[in-house]
Length: 392
Ligand SMILES: Cc1cc2nc3c(=O)[nH]c(=O)nc-3n(C[C@H](O)[C@H](O)[C@H](O)COP(=O)(O)OP(=O)(O)OC[C@H]3O[C@@H](n4cnc5c(N)ncnc54)[C@H](O)[C@@H]3O)c2cc1C
Image (cartoon, rainbow, N blue to C red; front, side, top):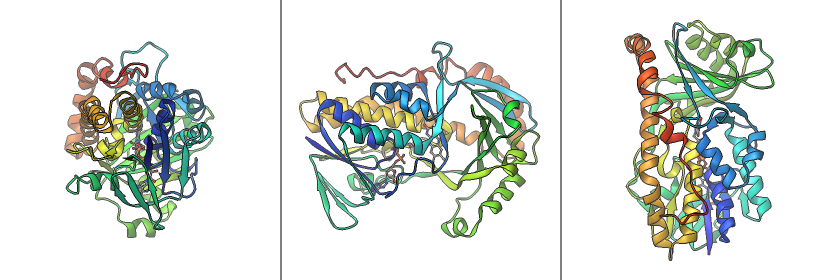
């Protein structure tokens, strides 16, 4: 069997690796010509995603590309501490999540897949998709027994499977990410934790790194950034705008933005709560193409990795491709849609207005004490996939 995978982000090379372990041939087509491991900003891989990376034999390499995150420490606009959430659910003390650049995660997965013998083609933009065949922008085609769309939230494969498939839903937030090097602020933040602030005008996050830097992001509630606005706005202009939003609150955000460098600017964020049809004759979607959670979930990469392994298991264990695709969807749909809903709830807390903010600050300490607890998030982080077992 030969599988054509559209998209070389997170799910694509992970699926290539997992299929390789089952003896199924795969080719991964990625539209970006240059896979730059330093572009863009950071994400967090949860303990469930790290477990998948261990199954794929790449966990150690990925861990070297990032740094440990054990907690989210949440603050209100006034600087008041609202609560602390473990990123390990009810797992043993000492476990946790990993924070790293999305592009480094993709680079490690891609490097391992290539070394294992998976064919990877950068600069291959897919323009048309059909059962078992994709046509590239240059007019050439690539054939296989199955086409997998690992092509992200704006997936072409999803729209080919079902032309009425929903598009990504704008979640009302524009994301910015940056780094401030060698700053004294690093020593004032809790190590191995995201310092998160429900600010009066924007949501802010900062994480000290083991090198004494601080990586940070700002989620700005606003209309999406247009192509023209992105093209017309310089890096210092974006930072001045961000400073005006986060510098009004007490805390380190203003200084970090003023002294830092933007690595991601004007990224409109989308989610995808429910895609009715995941597969049709010899085509299927995985990862964000099937179910994008808002970045607020902190789970997008982890559940994309889970999908990759479960689809490979289904193709390994089921008697035919159709049964495998149905089995994969049955195994995954309820869990991923639950993650997307949880992400949507976290995201909506970031866009409360001024009155909502005051209510939030009063109520959130209770929420983090009694409702959103290590136990209540355990279903997300404690999930494990037994590679040796037959997928049910
Ligand atoms: C700002 C931001 C912050 C995030 N933070 C987190 C976080 O903290 N934790 C977390 O787990 N997740 C986070 N996510 C989500 C996470 O990045 C995604 O959920 C994850 O990357 C999904 O992997 P994927 O492989 O499905 O899609 P992607 O990583 O989007 O990969 C899709 C790939 O397909 C390629 N492609 C698209 N169309 C074509 C085509 N026609 N032909 C060829 N190639 C194509 C793209 O170039 C891309 O490389 C964040 C996302 C954003 C935007």
